Image 1: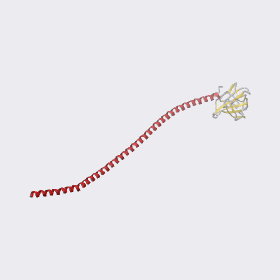
Image 2: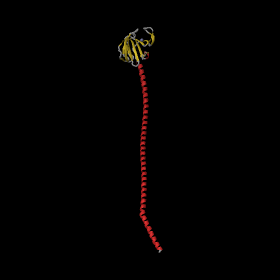
Image 3: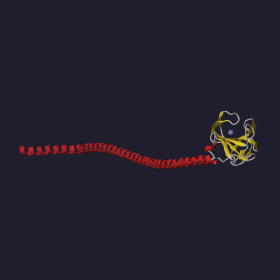
Length: 255
Ligand SMILES: [Zn+2]
């Protein structure tokens, strides 16, 4: 019966154990499950938070990149715009330079043209002098000579042209009459200012028919041949002055 008793005891013991296990399972399992669940939840939350953080930083980086890309695009567009502007400026400068060169050539040509025209005018001015009178003979040229009245060697500031009394005397060039008067030596005489540093004088006239301030043209009658003043016979003393200095009329008029 020991065996019997032992078996019963053993059954009872097992039963008790079983109850313990059941108790353990009944009470422990939920706890264990709760623990596992909690842990899992915590891990999940933590993980999600990390993922969220990671996602946020990726998003941020993406935004930053986007911003950088936009800034680069803007900078590139600005650079392109500046490059275009520079190209345009360069092109404009080139055009201006070419234009300036062309204008310089034109101005150069114009200057040459003007210089030629000036020379022509100058020549024409020289040629423009006309004979102040239809004379018979030049009795006294320009330069040193024995004065016909004073009888001593003196410089003759003009040419003496002999003609009949009353022969018309004309303005040798166009200009303004600055003197038309009588003087003991020059007699009735006229001075014409030709307005380009030249003047001409006409002395010993029988009479003059112009007034001071009058404008006369080349060839216009200004008076008549005579022998007034210090003169020995009917003649015209004709003189040309350049900047106040006497010059030889023979250089301006074919005598
Ligand atoms: Zn004279």
